[in-house]
Image (cartoon, rainbow, N blue to C red; front, side):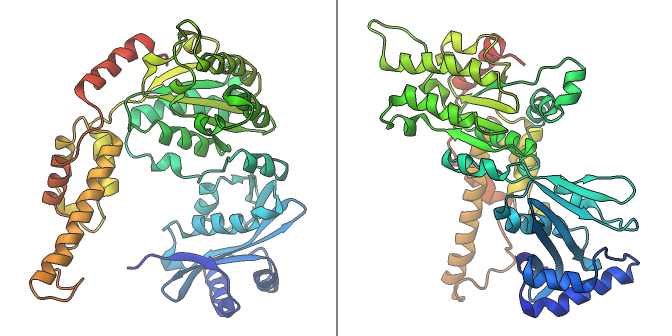
Length: 436
């Protein structure tokens, strides 16, 4: 069956809205808002529909006023429930109401309503008795402009769940970072001080940037990436631009601030006379303690070469944790392969063999090999058919996607990012420099 998609409501969809309304009544679920209100909001406020081909299979309608948003109507045809359509509809209608600068999004549902997963998946909280769903908008109107000027953004809510495998790393980050930051009041009861700054280190391509974004997604905090190479062009110089950037970040209520390849601005200070970058390192060492005094924010620095960092940079009091992000184990590699292999051929591919053959591969290496296998399978299907006299794109026989052999060939031709020497050095760095 083809995939459904989300689009804006059209006037010609009125009959479909009525059909969805009737489907709720047939399930003995009386909508809170009158049909006339729903239809009026479809035309005047914000409405989206889910369509499969030309059929409307779901709809969400929202109304915004005075920084408060309400979900007026949410419904999916019975045969299409449980596919995540409701969650996607809620996300789409929230996006269309975002320009109003909402600070809260709510939904009032009848007590008999049982299909609440769509709301829970979007971060709404259930209130007692009335099943009143309420969601606090992560970034409020006053923050939108400074966030935009910083190049920051709100990342999709599902990035954390989409990190394939890497179970040990996810559990560690969930416990050490997300838990005390997301539940600050509970952490305070236990005397836990939420972390303010961490370093992620490991070989190239192991997913440090992905994890930094996933943490921001999990917390629903704005993600601001600081690019030293861009700041270097500032007339104030790199050190001055860095200081100014962090002063602007201080204006945000919450933020995950990310600096990749931090060794470029925090390398070991040495030499006579001092190098120009030593002033930048000194400035960064001053910035971090001031940053730590501000609640509701987290600095994440990533490096491929932790040994290159200045010793003063890593000391206690600046960074709460120094967390290794290494090569995926067999379980993680299996999860990654299952994610990248098309569902139509997954059952016929020897995933266990691919896991075995990709020991020592980084997540980036596995993704490259998977995409390479898909590309070569597509070319074989099309050009082999052409060579046999079939029309282009047709006559592909029984082939429906990449085969195990396609993946093995791609694996064999993939140059791994991390050498044995680099991996061994990483394991040594865990013992010497890691702090979890």
